[in-house]
Structures are given as C-alpha cells and as structure tokens.
Image (cartoon, rainbow, N blue to C red):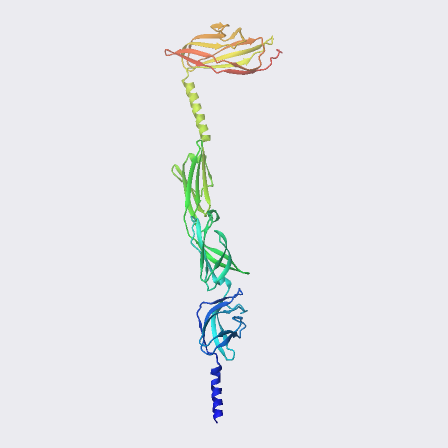
Length: 457
C-alpha cells in the first residue's frame, strides 16, 4: 500500500520536477528582419535559471534558423545575457509583424514554450530621404537619408538624383541615424523648371541588394522678372525691351509702346504686337505674353528716319534753289559746244545766257579764256567791249537790262593743238548795279569730253 502511494506521488509530481524552470526577459525592442537581406533579427535576452544547473537548447517548428545553435549552460540561480538571432526564411513575401513560437529545452527536462515578435520589412522600408525647400536663388541645398529602423548598416552605397543635382556617396548608418549632405547647386540646371514638388530619387545598395526609394523636393514659388531697355541709333533708331523670367512661375507680361501717327509709318516691330489701338494722334502697340521660367522675351522696335530725312533734305534744297532764284537779280548761264573747222583745228563755241530777274543797270560780263586757246574774231550777238589776249580776258558792257529780259552772247575759241580728255571752262562773272548797290553773280562751270578731232566731211 505504501509503495503504491509513493508511485502515485511520483507520477503526479514528475512533470513539474522535469519541467524547465527559466524566466526569459527581452531587453531589446523594435527588432526587424529585412527579407531582402540574409541578415537575422537580433534580440537581447536575459535568461534566469530558477531550476537546477542545466544546458539549454533553442528550437522552433517553423523552419527558422536560430542562434545560438549549440546548447548553453546556465547554473542554478544564474542570469545569463545572450544575443538571440532569428534568420530569414521564405515567408512568401510576408510583410508586417510576425510572432514566432519557439521552445527552450533542458538536457533531461521538458520543453518550455516562448514567443518573440518582430517586424518583417523590405530593404527600401528601412530608409527615408528628403531635402530642404529650394528656390531659384538658392546656391546650395541640404538633403538627408535616415535609417528608420533598429538595424545597423555597415556600408551603404547611395546614388541620389533630382532635376537639381546628382550625388553619389558611401557611408554607414546605425539604428535610427540620420545623415545630412550639403550640395552646391548650378542655377543653369533648373532655371527653366516651374515651381512645385519634384521627385528625389535614391538608389540604395547594401551588399548585393539594390533598392529604390523616393522623396520630395519643394521648389517654392519665386517671382523674379528682370526688365532691360536699350536704345541706340540716330537716323535709324532701335529700341530693345528685354524681359527675362529668372523665377520659377510663369510670368504674365504686358508691354506697351506709343508712337505718333508720323513715326508709326517708318516703324517696324519684331515680334508683331498683339493689340494696336489708335487714339487721336497717338497709336498704342501692346504685347501680351506668358514667359516661362528661364525664358527671355525680346521686343525690338526700329524706326527708320532715313527716307523722311531724304525727303526733307530734298524739299529744303528745292526751297533754297527757288528762293535763290527768286531773290537773284541776274542769272548767268554758260554752255559750250564743239565747232567743226575746215582745217581740223580744235574749236569750241562758248555761249553766255543773261537773264534779268529784276531790272538792273551797268552790267559788266567778264569771262576768262583757258590757256593754249585763241579767240576767233567772229562773234554771235553783241561784240565784246574788250578782249585781252595776254590775260585771256573778254568783257561785255550793257547799260541796262529790263526785268525779264534775256540776251545771249557767243564767241569761238580754237587751238592748233589737239586736246583730249575732260575739258573744263571757268565760270563767267557778271557785275551789275541795282538800287545803288554793286552786286556780283557767277555762272556755272562748263565741262565737255574732248575726243580726237575728225576732219570735216
């Protein structure tokens, strides 16, 4: 009877005697497992052995490899700290929090069930990239890359690009660490970009695994419009209006130029204006444009005063000539013609036409003969008053010319020597008296081209 009672007690208390008596405390937190990488989730555990000294082994029924693989000895009443690791396995792209059921077993004792929870992520979920706001006047920008998880990355190769810059860096990132980089900007790279959000692209390489992450860059609105005006030229005046959009928003531009009704006739535009309005003596030209960032609007206005200036000069000359003729008392005109001679000498007939615009008195006409010529003794019209062969001077005297009266006098000069080329005769001079004043007027110069003389037919 006593033996049976003892057997029953042993059967009742044997499981508790053989059971593992340990307490496990997890001192780490936020453990993760990166499915892309062959890196384990790592836990810091404190194990207190409340039972007898034993060697303990860890295992699970779900195919995860765990560390430590070998049994660890923990003495009775001892607390041991260990680094417990769970390695990845194919979870069919499972992402999120996962609770692993595992067991701890002593050498000659029953198993003790435990649980660990960790997060399974892709490599790209471990990082975050971003940048400061940027505007068209920025010379630099600060970007960052942040480790969002409790995981140490020994070496990261990163290529980060955007419409504003490109960057390649190698660095390490410890748990939750954030690294910043200052980048110099070239304004030419983004002078034509419009304000708004742009994608910041990051290509991250860890070991043999590549992944891509994206962030945002805020290109803040900046209204910068620069207007330059230039004007040059005198006869042909050119006005250039240049409007440059150095901001990052589309600029609505209105440009207006006014011309009077005369100058508009000689003005050309490039480009042609959008609106033309006339009010009284003024014509308004308006250009309406939308200038994109980085673009330059150039309006060229050219006024050519050459043609109207020539017209004005011509009118002034005509007026002066008319005025001179109308105010000249006596007009003296000289012309010359070839004369054929029987002996084939060089001979010219010189004619002086005297026209009285007003009544004049005591008129003295003086003409000079070129050298190497002689005067013939035959004259057409009144003969000269004096002929001086030595000084080559010939004169006519008239007592009076009535207003509107015209007379012509002629004489012939000749030379035994043939004369070739351009032949010029000096102007004749008329001296006269009007209203008690002595006045003088000259004729034109007479020219002709002398060719080799021909014998008279």
